[in-house]
Length: 311
Image (tube, rainbow, N blue to C red; front, side):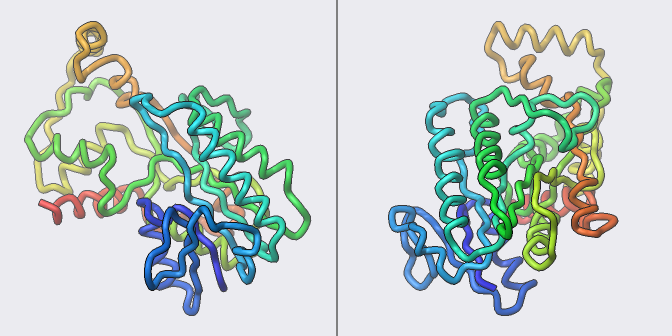
């Protein structure tokens, strides 16, 4: 099997490539990136053309412009990278002899806020330029599909794993400094995705006959933000300090934060306390499995352990 991967230098790609090499003996991997690296089978974006897909069996398109929560990225940049680049990759795929195309989209292509549980049946209504660009790429793939050319549009929620320097790392630093979690009065539920589970799904898609389509991808379980705090504290060898400060007081502090431009504001409070539960039943049914190999707590513990190793 010979596969072509874009976005190999990112967090997901840097975990996926060694995983596939270990799990699929004899696999050949070509990479698409900004520049060529000596000794690596890598194609620069400037040199990428349809002939670059010769001999390729499957394409995994990870490359994209990530969501910038600080709103410093121009909307046109999202369109150029997340849509135009995906369109070009898919067109090349359709012109090649490859038979599988995996596009890593995002749950944000559907919605920024979830009422109940997010399934694939929900009509997408993204708010951000990031989400809209991802959805536009999804729509292009589906309207351009051809017989005998499988495609898998994956919508992951927040992906985490060893050495991921995202929000979990910020929570970890908060725990290590002995700060309490003051939002114990809030009860929410959120889905996460361990990088181990993501890699496992890609392996199954490459090796199995799976129906083309759009699939949510998340761990089997969801956690409240308080449970997440407690798991991180356990992994860090700390005692979790939970404060049940009244919601009224917290809301008032957050509103003052909006006015005074403080780190604690209503937007950050919403992110910490909102519900975002993602249903992965369609994916598991398509793969013929009852559950994913890594449960949510295992994944979080492994991620936090990597933070401990960096100390």
